[in-house]
Amino acid sequence: MQKSIKISFVVAIYNVGEYVEACIKSLVSQKSDDIEILLIDDGSTDQSGEICDTFMNDSRVKVFHNENGGASVARNTGIESASGEWIYFVDGDDLLADNIIDKILVLLDDKYDIIYTGHAALKNGKSKVVGPWLQGQKLLGKDDFKTFQRWMLNKYEFGDEFAVAAPWAKLYKRAFLIDNNLRFTPGVKIGQDKLFNMYVCEKAQCGIYVSEPTYFYRIIETSRSKRYSPNIEKSYENLLYKLKDYIDGLNRAELSEAYRMRKITTFMYYIVNDFCHPDNKKTYRERREKFLYYLGQPLYMNMTKITDYRMMSWQEKMLLMGIRKKSFLMLDLLCKMRRVLLILSR
Image 1 (cartoon, rainbow, N blue to C red):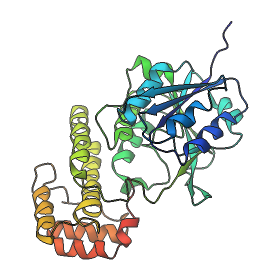
Image 2 (image 1 turned 45 degrees about the horizontal axis):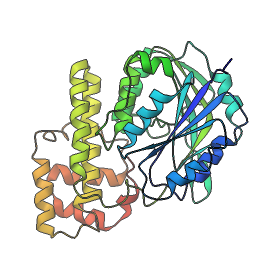
Image 3 (image 1 turned 180 degrees about the vertical axis):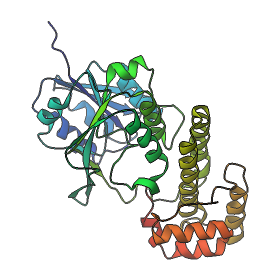
């Protein structure tokens, strides 16, 4: 009789050849036959796919080589191919904590739809536990999941100590995902994790949070959240419009307010990653015109009125002031200080 699989680790991999071997080793080193490891190579053009194949001698490992379709498609492949009772998503440049599997297996309970765990940040070989949100354990109900939805939209209300919108450091009951047709949305290049977890929190009835770190999230300074991203606005607007349609359908005032705050945060990304990024070689006039064009679009009009900015950093407050005053000169000077480029993370 075939052994029942408890956890399917789904690893979305795209051009992370420098890190993927360490990622996979952190999974195969877990001493358990109750797991499977699904490596989804999303059409990598570097050596990532070949590295995946070198682990196929481990019977728990399955490798999928897909055409490039984005992280959403890769993770959906994992959901549909998994045989485990629970699904744990891993990014191909991150790590699972050492010898953590026994502690994870103890958490599994059929009454939960989702299990949240703590995580640590890994930068330059050094790790630091993030948060945690709270110490120990907390049972979660519908009110908590509604809170998480606001949290995903408005970081200023809650802070960043809990990666509530990320797909990793979580265990999703596979039957819960399948029964509710919960999938990542193809075509959403930025923020697909947030959209997925908004849907998850709408459907979830019961869960648990455990502060024990199970996951190491690697911080790479050249990641997309820091580098120049011309026309990043189009990708973010795709997410914003999908969030708007979803939130309008729920008719919850507190989510609508949180969404307005999300638009402010997003517009700040436009400023630091495109309009005022030092690698943007367009003229000052061209960059200013683009800033004013987007600021005048209906999606962003009135977004800064009656804004609670108490939890913003001083850099973000200055950005907000520049947006309110429509002062591109002020924003451009701020970004030339370069400090502001370090304080915004997706």
